[in-house]
Image (tube, rainbow, N blue to C red; front, side):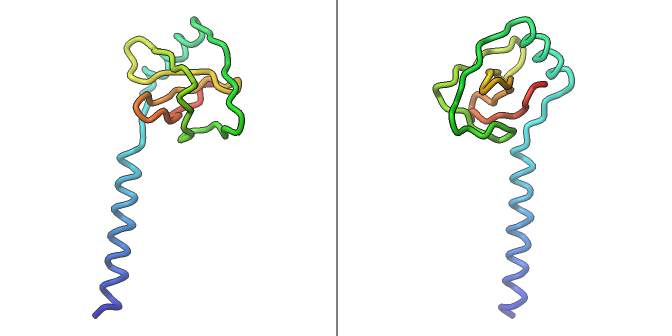
Length: 99
């Protein structure tokens, strides 16, 4: 009985983890992407160098990086290590690298 119970619990835990990861995913609509790209292009800022930061989606930027507001968008942007990134201000995680 115990041998069938443990895999079942492990399977449920795995499925719960996948559900949590999916709920944590941030979706930026195409309209928001357009607004952000246009705003960033019109309002350039200096790049901040952060040594040792591997920049990508999910990376966390330190408190020393000043986040810039984009009107009508809940996310912020910054230029870090010469890359413009969209950041969730609550978690300071990179949600998109802007091309």
